[in-house]
Image (cartoon, rainbow, N blue to C red; front, side, top):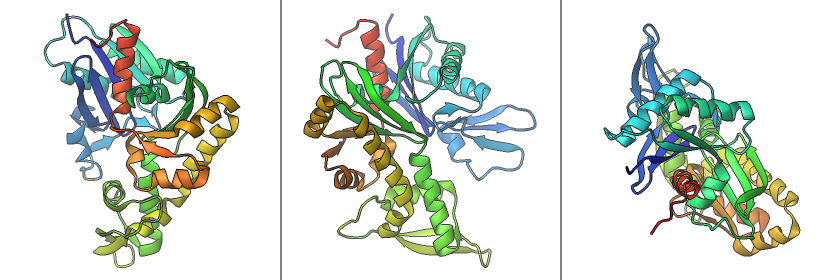
Length: 330
């Protein structure tokens, strides 16, 4: 019986499912749309994301995970069930073994909630793995060696920073500042600076297209549509990447600050390893331009982004299941 081992990256912004032998088979936004009157789920994933901010009164599109923690248990459970079934297709004779990853700062209660939801969604066995370890495995780092590696995983709701050696976390910090906060900071900036009200999706669009954390040699521009707060009418404003740098400054400096704190607590031998090997960034938030340069300029440590930052955690979670069940990739 094959394909019964699954790794799930249960993220605030997206859910990724990894199946042994197949890789990442599903990547969808963690959004659920349901009808308030009947409590029936209307859409899950990408279909529901398109409804964010565009629904009639009785339909609400929600993100059941906030800052890496389950905020709506029943919706999360239904969403997981849906994604697991979608990923496995019809072949579910035996219940799968599932590893789910959680941010490094979660409490036992929150861990238990994830575990219960996964069992309810149809798992035979559940293992919970911490995000930085999954990210490190997914980024291709051999975590079993007695050598220090620093991982900075910037997701949608949390940023996890950890120093890993011998398969475990030595020092870590999890801050509730990440990709979503980038979006919110852009919304705030546009409102304050341009008197323009924009939605979360537009903000995310700005972040992806021209967002920057560090000065660029050539600024990029983007025309942004929103509602003018003075006239109340739709309006288009031209925004530069330099403005996004200013808008994101608070958030990016909090992430740098957290990296700094973790480095201060790192034992000297491991700190020397990190200075040698550099800092590895993973997670969707690490795709923000100029983040590597910013961290380098503030810490003096070479910083690089993993090859597939978006899927690193899911791949790592899946590989961890294989590792637990004694499989080796032949």
